[in-house]
Image 1 (cartoon, rainbow, N blue to C red):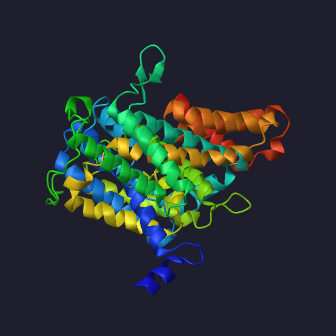
Image 2 (cartoon, one colour):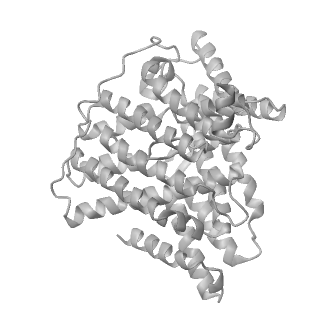
Image 3 (cartoon, rainbow, N blue to C red):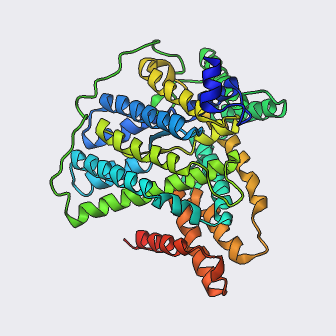
Length: 445
């Protein structure tokens, strides 16, 4: 088995070990396991069966991640995307009035289109056209975005009517445990403990469990303070039958429906490109030209996962930015992704255990990963404003707009405009004109 894994995932070639890869895969899973509950919660607002959605979410994540592991040999994990699931439920179904079956049909069509775009290297061309400066900026912006999500999950940053966001209650037990978790993780990193991020998650959870047993952590579901003690060990996976293959092909040629497909396509396309750029930059996968080897395989995994997810009954499945946590923990090959995929399958059986891992335990990991991804900010030439402004817009807008694609859009448009107006059109890859136009159309429509 050891030799099979070594040869299949080229571990020596990537300067990694089985232990490191498995630990990294567990770390990735721990930081994105929340999707098993959050995705069904969002999509069930459309009338879809909540329990069936749990199974669909886990299977879609496992299928996409396995394809990424074996076809692309990258440590990237996939799952139904946040933001895209909200658009599916609250806009397409509840606001526009389409049935969830028709919305699933749009996701299915999107996946097929993505497969074609991947076969004909269109998505690869878009990836390679994005300038190196923006690729560096995407990594930094994603780092801030991930850290922002971590602080939100911990209640350290909260919504505020006056200033939109503000500081939360630092005396709350969740905030305190998150800060303790950050300190523990940093100490482990400094001491070069393997799997430091994963151990930080587990240590924070165990401290929280002790706090609950001693009465310091008080269970209050209304405040998001759920019990940290598992209600059991195993459970039977819910049936997929209420949502499996539930397509509706009526009205698929209407202008409004085509616009729905375009929106799904656009957001997923540039979210995925942004995620691949950011995480690949951190992992050191990009070559001297800023290109990602085996980008076609990685994008194909994403496209097939979206199509399979629609068949199973869930919204767009995409590459997850939380993959950066596994990369930061040493993951460099598909064995990391394979481990994450296996854990998604096991989660269907051991969901009572998985569901008690609180957000304050995974928040420190997100903050630390955000810190790691800031390192490439020093590679951006801030003395050249035609490079600095697009990079700044990308970095600044990702956390504030709460969107990787929106941040990349602001950066892409400003890059083309500034370069043109300053007479540096030679710096612009021809495909970037098309990309900038797509960004403009997206914002206008």
